[in-house]
Amino acid sequence: MGWNLHEQLPRQLDFFILLSSLSGVYGSVSQANYAAGNTYQDALARYRILQGEKAIAFNLGWMRTIGIIAEKEDYQKLREISANMNHVEEEKLLSLLEIYCDSRQPVPPPSRSQLLVGVVTPSDCQIKGIPPPGDMNRPLFSSFTQELDIGLRTDRGDEVDSATLFKAAETEEAKVQIVIQALATKLARSLSISTDDIDADKRLFEYGVDSLVAVELRNWIAKEFLADVAVFDIMGGATVAALCNLVTKRSKIEN
Image 1 (cartoon, one colour):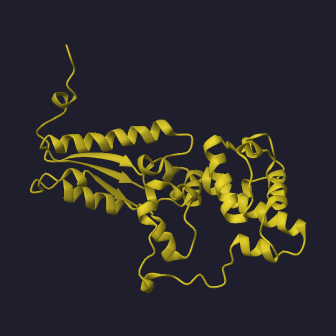
Image 2 (cartoon, helix red, strand yellow):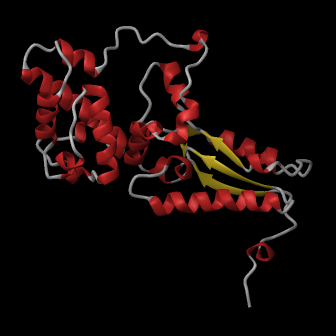
Image 3 (cartoon, helix red, strand yellow):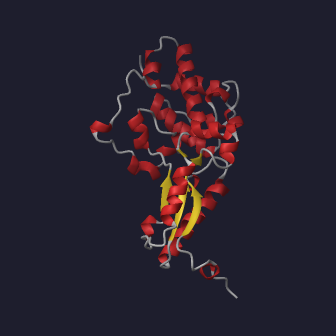
């Protein structure tokens, strides 16, 4: 006998609310199973709406005062470093629950089956004058990278990018140090760790750099330093310092 998921779920709820996570949208380093579980909840909310029932999935950022992140200081630091989602206050979540638990709420359209709470987009980073986290360079976020109205832009003041510093450096050693600092920042963001935890003498694979991260790093190096390096150069056992030396030698940025 077949099993009908729809028949097994309660039908009398005013609103079927699922507490999902933004990890299902952004992905989660080394936690693909967790991200997949959240996308299942998102799909389930949409499915119930298509059946004419009230449902919504809250894709939450990290809760500042509730749950494992609130209980573990290290987890909070990792979330702050990755910077791809904002914290959510308990009062905000309770207010959302109060709104959607109201029996007067109509069945939402399928396009409103998810509510992203605490989301950060490339445009948000643009307003603050900071580069977006690496995972926001994916095609999924391309529609959020359009420049905002001039009145909303933030002056970045004296902030200088790595390519400019590299070009101005007078010695090869200075150039290498600039690349090391830039790569450490990039790795820290991609792997959700602190920049201080990046040791230039360690091999890249020791930081969990896999083929996907290697491709991202290769593309970033080509864009930032005009240097052509292969994925094998990154995955072949090179240390952070060795890769940065290679980038410096191959860079086409001229003084």
